[in-house]
Image 1 (spheres, rainbow, N blue to C red):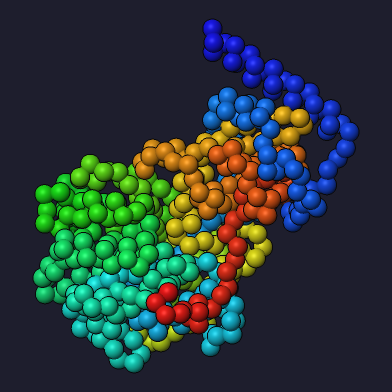
Image 2 (image 1 turned 90 degrees about the vertical axis):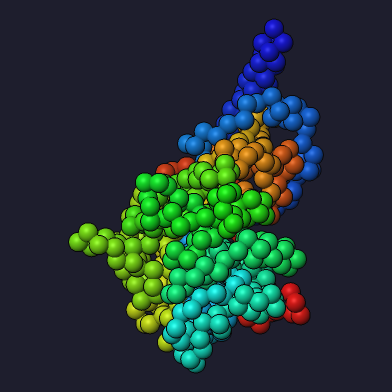
Length: 471
Ligand SMILES: [Zn+2]
């Protein structure tokens, strides 16, 4: 009975407001533009009327995907370059990220100003015999948090700095444990020390990318009796002395590349649930890594393969099909200095032109994955009161990581199709989202207007110059 009464009340509120809205719509037509700037912020921005709260609280949380635009306006696709940090020195990292992320004048021409992240590691335990850079440095010189397996710090300050400013967003496992002599040097103690040091410096990546050969027993996520090749992976085996996923997931890793490469370039949804051997669940994600030519794997994750990875045809198709792509790279792996030749640069500029034309949003891996997760699992309620539509974002009901109330950064880019963006208000957990974080959009290719939470502001800062003591 009580339930019926409540339903009736909600229905009456909705009907009344629909009538008022219909009336006001007849009365005036509101101009809408993509760069809408509100002339003044109404007092109701900060105070949500009780009737609205009531209606929103009563409304069932929903996620009708036809109301959510697949990507932030005006884009029709999202792409990340996911880079493994193998054989990279700090100097190489800084030189190529200065070109990729800033708009500074660089030896390779004006910087691209794209949001491209990278990975990092803590230990170098590899016996790689060759030189890793143009200056002839050997493997020990690789960019790493610690000095080899020694707990004394090497590039810890720089890595923490580049994590905080967004040039690093992934952990390429705890380190490079690839060994030609097949010795296994990883231990759980190294993982404990790694997380302790990362926590002390605020280096808390959410993305984990497995690395390398079978001596990298810290890898996890692909163990399967039917895939014996991956059975060396021990990171998630509670019975193993290499077990660490209790710490690793406990410290905030959300997304895992489990070593299984893909020749598929694009996905409707880049995430899949990954069940670990210790019973925990985490998100796995797909990365495009290779082609199959005459039945054989042809890895394309080197910088000079960029023109084969990012063809105009592929980018066009990505836009047409409205999909995600995570493109694997080893941006710093080469030892011939700056990693991009003129053809590679042309390809990167082509990618940039897709973003400039509002077609493909280039985003660092963690942002792409967070967005995909939010888009799929966000729950919100809608109510119309006094001619205004209110959308209250309530939760991310994540079946793998659990239900949470999102932060503003976790809902960035979320875009709702609505009839009248000017008369729509967005709320996060019943608190109005500030007007300067809202984007009201005119019609897109579908002929539909929308309102959304602004994507991250572009950031072209040359962070090679901004580091201050220990930050
Ligand atoms: Zn690697």
